[in-house]
Image 1 (cartoon, one colour):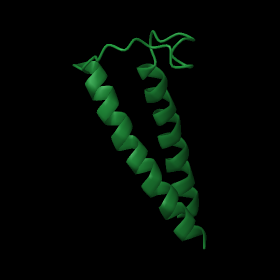
Image 2 (image 1 turned 90 degrees about the horizontal axis):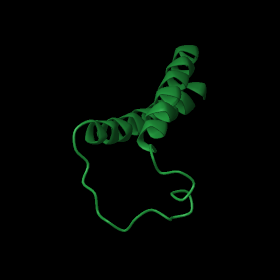
Image 3 (image 1 turned 30 degrees about the vertical axis):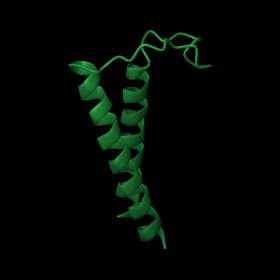
Length: 73
């Protein structure tokens, strides 16, 4: 059981990293230090789907991590 949870956690973490990197398109180095424009931009289409999937996958990662700690005891 613990091994399967670890494998699921690795797969979820790799997918979460990919989703986060896909969202950071076009920001460049200026976005790292807060040099992004001050214009509010709403998310539509694929951006909104990526954003919602990232939130959902981060919740799944958190739950799998807690389950992994409980099973390891």
